[in-house]
Length: 438
Image 1: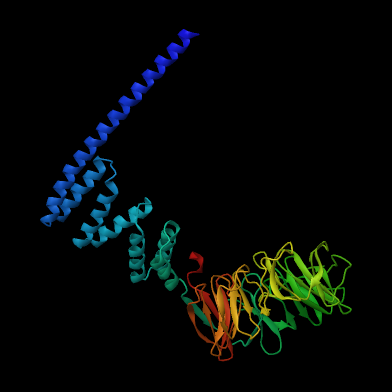
Image 2 (image 1 turned 30 degrees about the vertical axis):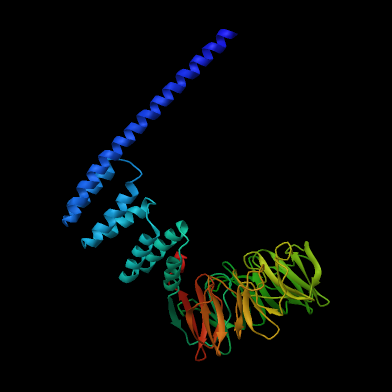
Protein backbone atom coordinates (compact mmCIF):
# COMPACT_ATOMS: atom_id res chain seq x y z
CA UNK A 1 0.00 0.00 0.00
CA UNK A 2 2.87 2.35 0.90
CA UNK A 3 4.54 1.59 -2.45
CA UNK A 4 1.32 2.37 -4.34
CA UNK A 5 1.02 5.72 -2.62
CA UNK A 6 4.65 6.45 -3.39
CA UNK A 7 4.12 5.65 -7.09
CA UNK A 8 1.03 7.87 -7.21
CA UNK A 9 2.93 10.74 -5.60
CA UNK A 10 5.77 10.34 -8.09
CA UNK A 11 3.28 10.28 -10.99
CA UNK A 12 1.62 13.50 -9.80
CA UNK A 13 4.97 15.19 -9.45
CA UNK A 14 5.87 14.26 -13.03
CA UNK A 15 2.51 15.65 -14.26
CA UNK A 16 3.10 18.92 -12.43
CA UNK A 17 6.55 19.23 -13.95
CA UNK A 18 5.16 18.59 -17.44
CA UNK A 19 2.34 21.13 -16.99
CA UNK A 20 4.81 23.72 -15.72
CA UNK A 21 7.06 23.07 -18.68
CA UNK A 22 4.18 23.43 -21.13
CA UNK A 23 3.02 26.66 -19.52
CA UNK A 24 6.53 28.02 -19.61
CA UNK A 25 6.81 27.07 -23.27
CA UNK A 26 3.46 28.75 -24.01
CA UNK A 27 4.62 31.92 -22.26
CA UNK A 28 7.80 31.90 -24.34
CA UNK A 29 5.82 31.40 -27.54
CA UNK A 30 3.44 34.25 -26.62
CA UNK A 31 6.35 36.54 -25.78
CA UNK A 32 8.01 35.68 -29.07
CA UNK A 33 4.72 36.33 -30.91
CA UNK A 34 4.26 39.68 -29.19
CA UNK A 35 7.86 40.61 -29.89
CA UNK A 36 7.58 39.65 -33.56
CA UNK A 37 4.26 41.42 -33.93
CA UNK A 38 5.58 44.54 -32.21
CA UNK A 39 8.42 44.72 -34.72
CA UNK A 40 5.97 44.53 -37.63
CA UNK A 41 3.70 47.13 -36.01
CA UNK A 42 6.66 49.45 -35.57
CA UNK A 43 7.50 49.08 -39.25
CA UNK A 44 3.86 49.73 -40.19
CA UNK A 45 3.85 52.87 -38.03
CA UNK A 46 6.86 54.20 -39.91
CA UNK A 47 5.02 53.68 -43.21
CA UNK A 48 1.97 55.43 -41.76
CA UNK A 49 3.99 58.47 -40.63
CA UNK A 50 5.25 58.85 -44.20
CA UNK A 51 1.65 58.52 -45.46
CA UNK A 52 2.54 55.27 -47.23
CA UNK A 53 -0.93 54.10 -46.34
CA UNK A 54 -1.22 50.92 -48.34
CA UNK A 55 2.20 49.67 -47.22
CA UNK A 56 1.18 50.41 -43.63
CA UNK A 57 -2.12 48.56 -44.07
CA UNK A 58 -0.44 45.55 -45.69
CA UNK A 59 2.10 45.35 -42.87
CA UNK A 60 -0.57 45.67 -40.18
CA UNK A 61 -2.62 42.96 -41.89
CA UNK A 62 0.39 40.66 -42.04
CA UNK A 63 1.02 41.28 -38.33
CA UNK A 64 -2.52 40.13 -37.57
CA UNK A 65 -2.39 37.14 -39.90
CA UNK A 66 1.01 35.93 -38.70
CA UNK A 67 0.51 36.43 -34.98
CA UNK A 68 -2.44 35.94 -32.65
CA UNK A 69 -2.00 38.18 -29.62
CA UNK A 70 -4.23 40.31 -27.37
CA UNK A 71 -3.20 43.27 -29.53
CA UNK A 72 -4.97 42.00 -32.66
CA UNK A 73 -8.32 43.79 -32.07
CA UNK A 74 -6.59 47.17 -31.62
CA UNK A 75 -4.50 46.62 -34.74
CA UNK A 76 -7.61 45.74 -36.77
CA UNK A 77 -9.36 48.91 -35.61
CA UNK A 78 -6.25 50.87 -36.56
CA UNK A 79 -6.44 49.46 -40.09
CA UNK A 80 -9.97 50.83 -40.34
CA UNK A 81 -8.85 54.35 -39.47
CA UNK A 82 -5.99 54.27 -41.99
CA UNK A 83 -8.41 53.25 -44.74
CA UNK A 84 -10.56 56.23 -43.78
CA UNK A 85 -7.67 58.68 -43.63
CA UNK A 86 -6.41 57.43 -46.98
CA UNK A 87 -9.84 57.97 -48.53
CA UNK A 88 -10.20 54.28 -49.37
CA UNK A 89 -13.87 54.29 -48.36
CA UNK A 90 -14.92 51.22 -50.32
CA UNK A 91 -12.24 49.16 -48.58
CA UNK A 92 -13.15 50.86 -45.30
CA UNK A 93 -16.79 49.79 -45.47
CA UNK A 94 -15.89 46.33 -46.79
CA UNK A 95 -13.74 45.81 -43.72
CA UNK A 96 -16.58 46.93 -41.45
CA UNK A 97 -18.90 44.44 -43.18
CA UNK A 98 -16.38 41.65 -42.58
CA UNK A 99 -15.97 42.66 -38.96
CA UNK A 100 -19.74 42.60 -38.50
CA UNK A 101 -19.92 39.14 -40.08
CA UNK A 102 -17.20 37.97 -37.69
CA UNK A 103 -18.92 39.71 -34.73
CA UNK A 104 -15.85 41.87 -34.10
CA UNK A 105 -17.33 45.27 -34.94
CA UNK A 106 -17.72 48.07 -32.41
CA UNK A 107 -21.06 49.84 -32.05
CA UNK A 108 -19.75 52.85 -33.98
CA UNK A 109 -19.08 50.61 -36.97
CA UNK A 110 -22.67 49.32 -37.05
CA UNK A 111 -23.93 52.89 -36.91
CA UNK A 112 -21.57 54.15 -39.61
CA UNK A 113 -22.40 51.33 -42.04
CA UNK A 114 -26.12 51.82 -41.38
CA UNK A 115 -25.84 55.54 -42.11
CA UNK A 116 -24.08 54.71 -45.39
CA UNK A 117 -27.00 52.48 -46.38
CA UNK A 118 -29.46 55.24 -45.44
CA UNK A 119 -27.55 57.76 -47.57
CA UNK A 120 -27.61 55.30 -50.47
CA UNK A 121 -31.34 54.74 -50.04
CA UNK A 122 -30.85 51.10 -49.01
CA UNK A 123 -33.16 51.32 -45.99
CA UNK A 124 -33.76 47.55 -45.63
CA UNK A 125 -30.00 46.95 -45.40
CA UNK A 126 -29.72 49.75 -42.84
CA UNK A 127 -32.52 48.23 -40.78
CA UNK A 128 -30.93 44.78 -40.85
CA UNK A 129 -27.52 46.18 -39.84
CA UNK A 130 -29.02 48.19 -36.99
CA UNK A 131 -30.92 45.14 -35.77
CA UNK A 132 -27.66 43.16 -35.65
CA UNK A 133 -25.95 46.00 -33.80
CA UNK A 134 -28.74 46.42 -31.27
CA UNK A 135 -28.59 42.72 -30.45
CA UNK A 136 -24.97 43.21 -29.36
CA UNK A 137 -25.02 46.71 -27.90
CA UNK A 138 -27.39 48.93 -25.94
CA UNK A 139 -26.78 52.06 -27.98
CA UNK A 140 -29.01 55.14 -28.08
CA UNK A 141 -27.75 56.53 -31.44
CA UNK A 142 -28.40 53.18 -33.16
CA UNK A 143 -31.89 53.00 -31.70
CA UNK A 144 -32.62 56.60 -32.69
CA UNK A 145 -31.60 55.98 -36.31
CA UNK A 146 -33.63 52.76 -36.35
CA UNK A 147 -36.72 54.60 -35.16
CA UNK A 148 -36.16 57.39 -37.70
CA UNK A 149 -36.10 55.15 -40.76
CA UNK A 150 -38.37 52.19 -40.20
CA UNK A 151 -41.79 53.86 -40.37
CA UNK A 152 -41.90 55.04 -43.99
CA UNK A 153 -45.31 54.38 -45.51
CA UNK A 154 -46.99 53.88 -48.87
CA UNK A 155 -50.51 55.20 -49.45
CA UNK A 156 -53.29 53.82 -51.61
CA UNK A 157 -56.34 56.03 -52.07
CA UNK A 158 -59.80 54.63 -52.68
CA UNK A 159 -63.18 56.07 -53.62
CA UNK A 160 -64.78 54.24 -50.70
CA UNK A 161 -66.16 55.99 -47.62
CA UNK A 162 -67.30 53.02 -45.51
CA UNK A 163 -65.32 49.85 -44.74
CA UNK A 164 -65.05 47.15 -42.09
CA UNK A 165 -61.62 46.43 -40.70
CA UNK A 166 -60.21 43.14 -42.04
CA UNK A 167 -59.81 40.27 -39.63
CA UNK A 168 -57.52 37.82 -41.39
CA UNK A 169 -55.65 38.86 -44.51
CA UNK A 170 -56.51 42.00 -46.41
CA UNK A 171 -59.84 41.38 -48.14
CA UNK A 172 -61.60 44.53 -46.97
CA UNK A 173 -65.42 44.62 -46.77
CA UNK A 174 -66.64 47.94 -48.20
CA UNK A 175 -69.99 49.58 -48.86
CA UNK A 176 -70.90 51.48 -52.02
CA UNK A 177 -73.83 53.20 -50.36
CA UNK A 178 -76.30 50.38 -50.80
CA UNK A 179 -74.51 46.99 -50.94
CA UNK A 180 -71.33 45.43 -49.64
CA UNK A 181 -68.38 43.98 -51.58
CA UNK A 182 -64.68 43.30 -51.01
CA UNK A 183 -61.51 45.07 -52.16
CA UNK A 184 -57.85 44.32 -51.55
CA UNK A 185 -55.23 46.52 -49.92
CA UNK A 186 -54.33 48.01 -53.32
CA UNK A 187 -57.87 49.35 -53.60
CA UNK A 188 -58.83 46.87 -56.35
CA UNK A 189 -62.35 45.43 -56.27
CA UNK A 190 -62.21 41.68 -55.61
CA UNK A 191 -65.93 40.95 -55.16
CA UNK A 192 -68.34 43.54 -56.49
CA UNK A 193 -70.96 45.04 -54.14
CA UNK A 194 -73.78 42.49 -54.12
CA UNK A 195 -74.28 41.59 -50.47
CA UNK A 196 -76.67 43.07 -47.93
CA UNK A 197 -74.07 42.40 -45.23
CA UNK A 198 -70.44 41.28 -45.37
CA UNK A 199 -68.23 40.13 -42.51
CA UNK A 200 -64.43 40.14 -42.71
CA UNK A 201 -62.76 36.97 -43.99
CA UNK A 202 -61.44 34.51 -41.43
CA UNK A 203 -59.05 32.19 -43.20
CA UNK A 204 -60.48 31.25 -46.60
CA UNK A 205 -64.10 32.09 -45.85
CA UNK A 206 -66.45 34.90 -44.93
CA UNK A 207 -70.12 35.14 -43.99
CA UNK A 208 -72.30 37.38 -46.16
CA UNK A 209 -76.02 37.99 -46.43
CA UNK A 210 -77.68 37.35 -49.79
CA UNK A 211 -81.39 38.02 -50.24
CA UNK A 212 -81.92 37.88 -46.50
CA UNK A 213 -80.01 34.60 -45.97
CA UNK A 214 -76.58 34.24 -44.38
CA UNK A 215 -74.17 32.36 -46.63
CA UNK A 216 -70.57 31.19 -46.34
CA UNK A 217 -68.43 32.20 -49.36
CA UNK A 218 -64.82 31.83 -50.42
CA UNK A 219 -62.52 34.52 -51.82
CA UNK A 220 -63.94 34.25 -55.36
CA UNK A 221 -67.52 34.40 -54.12
CA UNK A 222 -68.45 30.72 -54.43
CA UNK A 223 -70.98 29.48 -51.87
CA UNK A 224 -69.98 26.83 -49.33
CA UNK A 225 -72.85 26.80 -46.84
CA UNK A 226 -76.30 28.35 -46.35
CA UNK A 227 -78.02 29.17 -43.08
CA UNK A 228 -81.14 27.03 -42.67
CA UNK A 229 -81.59 27.85 -38.98
CA UNK A 230 -83.02 31.28 -39.64
CA UNK A 231 -80.34 33.35 -37.90
CA UNK A 232 -81.39 36.95 -37.41
CA UNK A 233 -77.83 38.24 -37.24
CA UNK A 234 -74.23 37.05 -37.53
CA UNK A 235 -72.00 39.35 -35.52
CA UNK A 236 -68.61 37.65 -35.58
CA UNK A 237 -66.56 34.88 -37.14
CA UNK A 238 -63.25 33.28 -36.23
CA UNK A 239 -61.93 30.15 -37.90
CA UNK A 240 -64.75 27.63 -38.12
CA UNK A 241 -66.93 29.35 -35.50
CA UNK A 242 -69.42 32.19 -35.74
CA UNK A 243 -71.56 34.13 -33.29
CA UNK A 244 -75.18 34.12 -34.42
CA UNK A 245 -78.39 35.60 -33.06
CA UNK A 246 -81.68 33.70 -33.13
CA UNK A 247 -84.92 34.48 -31.31
CA UNK A 248 -83.18 37.44 -29.70
CA UNK A 249 -80.40 35.31 -28.16
CA UNK A 250 -76.77 34.76 -29.19
CA UNK A 251 -75.16 31.35 -29.61
CA UNK A 252 -71.99 29.73 -30.91
CA UNK A 253 -72.33 28.07 -34.32
CA UNK A 254 -70.08 26.43 -36.88
CA UNK A 255 -69.42 28.36 -40.07
CA UNK A 256 -71.72 25.87 -41.78
CA UNK A 257 -74.51 27.12 -39.50
CA UNK A 258 -74.81 24.28 -37.01
CA UNK A 259 -75.18 24.94 -33.27
CA UNK A 260 -72.07 24.01 -31.26
CA UNK A 261 -73.96 23.99 -27.94
CA UNK A 262 -77.55 24.59 -26.87
CA UNK A 263 -76.51 27.46 -24.61
CA UNK A 264 -77.71 30.95 -25.59
CA UNK A 265 -76.76 34.37 -24.24
CA UNK A 266 -77.70 38.04 -24.27
CA UNK A 267 -74.48 38.84 -26.19
CA UNK A 268 -71.24 37.12 -27.20
CA UNK A 269 -67.78 37.94 -28.56
CA UNK A 270 -65.60 35.41 -30.41
CA UNK A 271 -61.77 35.60 -30.59
CA UNK A 272 -59.23 33.85 -32.82
CA UNK A 273 -57.77 31.92 -29.85
CA UNK A 274 -61.06 29.99 -29.55
CA UNK A 275 -62.21 31.80 -26.40
CA UNK A 276 -65.58 33.56 -26.14
CA UNK A 277 -66.99 36.14 -23.80
CA UNK A 278 -70.71 35.63 -23.21
CA UNK A 279 -73.22 37.84 -21.45
CA UNK A 280 -76.14 37.01 -19.16
CA UNK A 281 -78.11 39.46 -17.03
CA UNK A 282 -75.61 42.33 -17.53
CA UNK A 283 -72.57 40.22 -16.57
CA UNK A 284 -69.94 38.63 -18.80
CA UNK A 285 -68.17 35.28 -18.48
CA UNK A 286 -65.22 33.76 -20.34
CA UNK A 287 -65.78 30.34 -21.93
CA UNK A 288 -64.23 28.09 -24.55
CA UNK A 289 -66.00 27.68 -27.87
CA UNK A 290 -67.32 24.27 -26.75
CA UNK A 291 -68.99 25.89 -23.74
CA UNK A 292 -66.42 24.99 -21.07
CA UNK A 293 -66.32 27.75 -18.43
CA UNK A 294 -63.02 29.60 -17.86
CA UNK A 295 -64.36 32.47 -15.70
CA UNK A 296 -67.84 32.87 -14.23
CA UNK A 297 -70.17 35.80 -14.93
CA UNK A 298 -68.10 38.39 -13.08
CA UNK A 299 -67.30 41.14 -15.60
CA UNK A 300 -69.35 44.29 -16.21
CA UNK A 301 -68.00 44.86 -19.73
CA UNK A 302 -65.73 43.37 -22.40
CA UNK A 303 -63.91 45.56 -24.93
CA UNK A 304 -63.77 44.59 -28.61
CA UNK A 305 -60.72 45.53 -30.66
CA UNK A 306 -60.54 46.76 -34.26
CA UNK A 307 -61.08 43.22 -35.59
CA UNK A 308 -64.22 42.77 -33.47
CA UNK A 309 -62.43 40.36 -31.13
CA UNK A 310 -61.64 40.60 -27.43
CA UNK A 311 -58.28 38.79 -27.28
CA UNK A 312 -55.03 39.77 -28.99
CA UNK A 313 -51.63 38.23 -28.20
CA UNK A 314 -53.17 36.34 -25.30
CA UNK A 315 -54.79 39.27 -23.49
CA UNK A 316 -58.22 40.91 -23.30
CA UNK A 317 -59.69 43.99 -21.63
CA UNK A 318 -62.61 43.68 -19.21
CA UNK A 319 -64.32 45.82 -16.59
CA UNK A 320 -65.42 45.36 -13.01
CA UNK A 321 -66.67 47.81 -10.38
CA UNK A 322 -63.20 49.39 -10.13
CA UNK A 323 -62.78 50.02 -13.86
CA UNK A 324 -61.12 48.47 -16.90
CA UNK A 325 -58.15 46.10 -16.64
CA UNK A 326 -56.27 43.40 -18.57
CA UNK A 327 -56.65 39.63 -18.14
CA UNK A 328 -54.88 36.67 -19.71
CA UNK A 329 -56.49 33.61 -21.31
CA UNK A 330 -57.06 32.04 -17.88
CA UNK A 331 -58.92 35.10 -16.65
CA UNK A 332 -56.04 36.17 -14.38
CA UNK A 333 -55.51 39.96 -14.12
CA UNK A 334 -52.21 41.15 -15.59
CA UNK A 335 -51.77 43.90 -13.00
CA UNK A 336 -53.54 45.80 -10.23
CA UNK A 337 -54.30 49.03 -12.08
CA UNK A 338 -57.83 49.90 -13.22
CA UNK A 339 -58.82 52.61 -15.68
CA UNK A 340 -61.80 54.86 -16.36
CA UNK A 341 -61.86 53.71 -19.99
CA UNK A 342 -59.83 51.49 -22.32
CA UNK A 343 -59.65 50.36 -25.93
CA UNK A 344 -59.37 46.76 -27.07
CA UNK A 345 -56.09 44.87 -27.12
CA UNK A 346 -54.35 44.95 -30.51
CA UNK A 347 -51.13 43.13 -29.56
CA UNK A 348 -49.08 45.89 -27.89
CA UNK A 349 -49.43 48.62 -25.27
CA UNK A 350 -53.03 49.20 -24.24
CA UNK A 351 -54.73 52.57 -24.77
CA UNK A 352 -56.32 53.71 -21.49
CA UNK A 353 -58.06 56.88 -20.33
CA UNK A 354 -58.24 58.80 -17.08
CA UNK A 355 -61.41 60.25 -15.54
CA UNK A 356 -60.97 63.44 -17.60
CA UNK A 357 -61.08 61.52 -20.88
CA UNK A 358 -57.40 61.95 -21.72
CA UNK A 359 -55.73 58.95 -23.28
CA UNK A 360 -52.36 57.34 -22.64
CA UNK A 361 -50.87 53.83 -22.74
CA UNK A 362 -50.03 51.06 -20.30
CA UNK A 363 -48.21 47.73 -20.39
CA UNK A 364 -50.67 46.44 -17.81
CA UNK A 365 -48.10 46.41 -15.03
CA UNK A 366 -47.20 50.12 -14.72
CA UNK A 367 -50.05 52.61 -14.43
CA UNK A 368 -48.89 54.26 -17.66
CA UNK A 369 -45.81 54.06 -19.86
CA UNK A 370 -47.06 57.01 -21.95
CA UNK A 371 -48.89 59.60 -19.87
CA UNK A 372 -52.47 60.73 -20.46
CA UNK A 373 -52.31 63.45 -23.13
CA UNK A 374 -54.35 62.52 -26.22
CA UNK A 375 -57.93 63.29 -27.23
CA UNK A 376 -58.36 59.68 -28.38
CA UNK A 377 -56.19 56.66 -29.14
CA UNK A 378 -56.09 53.05 -30.24
CA UNK A 379 -53.88 50.41 -28.64
CA UNK A 380 -50.44 49.67 -30.06
CA UNK A 381 -49.90 47.13 -32.83
CA UNK A 382 -46.98 46.65 -35.25
CA UNK A 383 -44.94 48.96 -32.96
CA UNK A 384 -47.17 52.02 -33.52
CA UNK A 385 -50.41 53.46 -32.15
CA UNK A 386 -53.00 55.75 -33.70
CA UNK A 387 -53.55 58.86 -31.59
CA UNK A 388 -55.72 61.96 -31.94
CA UNK A 389 -54.42 65.40 -31.07
CA UNK A 390 -55.61 68.77 -32.25
CA UNK A 391 -58.57 67.12 -33.91
CA UNK A 392 -56.48 64.96 -36.27
CA UNK A 393 -55.14 61.43 -36.16
CA UNK A 394 -51.55 60.30 -36.63
CA UNK A 395 -49.27 57.56 -35.29
CA UNK A 396 -46.63 57.41 -32.54
CA UNK A 397 -44.02 54.85 -31.56
CA UNK A 398 -43.41 53.43 -28.09
CA UNK A 399 -41.13 56.38 -27.25
CA UNK A 400 -44.13 58.68 -27.85
CA UNK A 401 -42.51 60.15 -30.95
CA UNK A 402 -44.71 60.98 -33.95
CA UNK A 403 -43.73 58.64 -36.78
CA UNK A 404 -46.67 59.25 -39.14
CA UNK A 405 -47.86 62.85 -39.13
CA UNK A 406 -51.35 63.69 -37.89
CA UNK A 407 -53.26 64.36 -41.10
CA UNK A 408 -56.33 62.12 -40.92
CA UNK A 409 -59.95 62.42 -39.91
CA UNK A 410 -59.83 58.87 -38.57
CA UNK A 411 -57.20 56.16 -38.25
CA UNK A 412 -57.25 52.49 -37.29
CA UNK A 413 -54.53 50.29 -35.76
CA UNK A 414 -51.99 48.65 -38.06
CA UNK A 415 -52.48 44.95 -38.71
CA UNK A 416 -49.85 42.89 -40.54
CA UNK A 417 -48.17 46.11 -41.64
CA UNK A 418 -51.27 47.83 -43.01
CA UNK A 419 -53.92 50.20 -41.74
CA UNK A 420 -56.99 52.07 -42.91
CA UNK A 421 -57.30 55.82 -42.45
CA UNK A 422 -59.81 58.38 -43.65
CA UNK A 423 -58.95 61.67 -45.33
CA UNK A 424 -61.39 64.10 -46.95
CA UNK A 425 -64.17 61.60 -46.34
CA UNK A 426 -62.54 58.70 -48.24
CA UNK A 427 -60.55 55.70 -47.04
CA UNK A 428 -56.86 55.19 -47.69
CA UNK A 429 -54.76 52.09 -47.06
CA UNK A 430 -51.39 52.76 -45.41
CA UNK A 431 -48.59 50.19 -45.66
CA UNK A 432 -45.47 50.21 -43.50
CA UNK A 433 -42.95 49.93 -46.32
CA UNK A 434 -40.36 48.00 -44.30
CA UNK A 435 -42.69 45.98 -42.10
CA UNK A 436 -41.18 42.67 -43.22
CA UNK A 437 -37.88 43.73 -41.62
CA UNK A 438 -39.33 44.58 -38.20
